[in-house]
Length: 337
Image 1 (tube, rainbow, N blue to C red):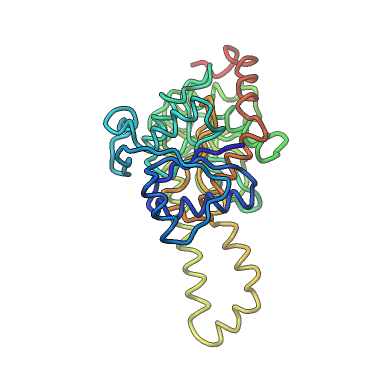
Image 2 (image 1 turned 30 degrees about the vertical axis):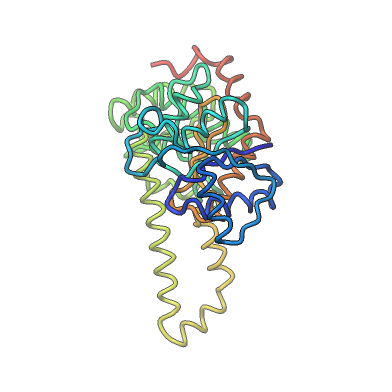
């Protein structure tokens, strides 16, 4: 399989993107199509002594899409950027999946309007695998749709359930709706209407979930609108970083605490890995016709390699065909406002 990579998306492009792509070649055995200025890519390769293997370069001469750019830049102002070119290459069959660490809004617009939605999908959503107390869970939407109708949320539940079943191997994923209480009557009008749809949907809906219970494994899929989901995502990452920093400072306080740390070092390292976002690499765009993965904007080489891994697993399980089959079977029966 061949993964199309936006060489100039993200804070650490192109160096860490190139390094991450080469890690993916070595560890995952995939081919890479790097998209961007060939001159700048090769200059970076030479300066850092990188040997490109199983990698081709597609030259694009447009301006880079910046994190501060309007989302529609991928369609208009910067239609010749590495990101926009990557989406067009994906559409034309030059690669099997597309990975970028660039502007989230632009990736969402590109995936929706260039790659296009799967027939029957109301709105594509950003789905992030998150660390839980015992097992990871899927949070969606994480930013593609700030405001959602009840039927959008209901369908997100179906998309998330299929992802957890076919990508993560969970037999009957428990789907919950993020809310400010567990009672069916809690929440905004939209959330209450979504609850009514989801309890009759063709997946394992377990009701509302409060934010404080999300980390403890009460659900395998947590559904939220893009505004709330993005807040949960960033708060989660911030608290994890603060917690690990606090533990580190406690054990480095003096010689005695440093000696104590030796006895629990294995457990601390395991916990650090459990809550390290770099292990998952980024988020997938669920609901579009071809695999699109949004890597973390601050991705280093390992993080980006793991984002490519997500694209590979997406392809290996043929999740898009599963989504299409489920929409054909269930569309019109559930998730209709």
